[in-house]
Amino acid sequence: MTRIIHITDLHFWRIVHNPLLLLNKRFLGNLNLALRRQYYVCQDRAKSFVDLFSSLNADVLLVGGDMTTTATESEYEMAAAFINTLGQSGISVYMTPGNHDFYTFEAVRHKRFQKYFGERMEHPATPRLAYLPGGMPLLILPTAQPNLLSSRGHITTQQILAARKLIDEAPDGHMVVLAHYPLLSNPAHHSNCMRSLDNAAPLRRMLGDVGRPLLYLAGHVHVFSHDCDPRFPNLEQVTSSALFYDKQHCPGGFTEIIIDKDAVMIQPWRFENGWKKQENNP
Image (cartoon, rainbow, N blue to C red; front, side, top):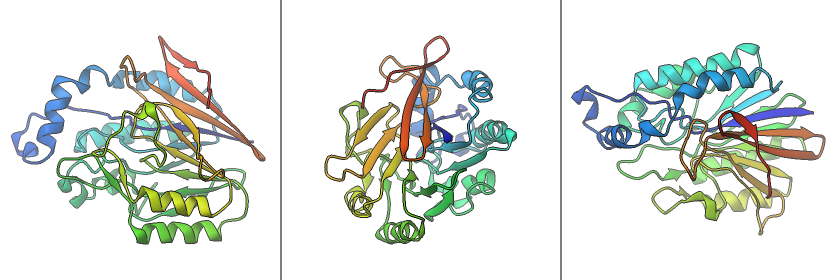
């Protein structure tokens, strides 16, 4: 049995006061942070999550991106300290960047993600194959890129082909896929064309055509959902809530996943005056 904890969209934040750091897209993100986001991203819940995490007896932690808000050094420092604290128990930690981790071209140019998380993911733009405790393969997909104004993601044809090669190399059976952007639409996602994934259709088709059971874990949309692909029965998608959110329609949370041979249990958690398990009605 393997117990996975999937967290995503942590959005650690610091309001930027240095005008020299605002001569890019960060100006808009910082304005949004000052006027809105700081009031519903409750990063002071980090300590309570660390305490809970130590009691969950997890085998692996999967981090689905958006560790930061505008990809500043101080935000990365906070996010890295948090992830490193969770990993102190010696469990396996795997991650993929989100669009907010690549919020500006400046952050990508200075390889800020690699600076703080390179020991966990040296090449964030390359599909990667790893193995969970117990031997189940894990495919990590790059879907984030910097954008001038939008929040769109992108995966290239070359990356899709490389991912297919890794799938073919992996042993038969169930596989977990970790990405930032979802593949399947869901009414709960509150998504639009400015926030979607470019090349999602060919990626979905490739994953569906492999035939093997795939559990696709994503974030970005800030809500929990659990869907089976109506076109490709082998493809199952879970999106997790933004970990520290406190909005009426987007409460904070994470997902606990227990895999026992061919059985997969999906257990959402939510913060409601404390961390509590929720019902899952896929």
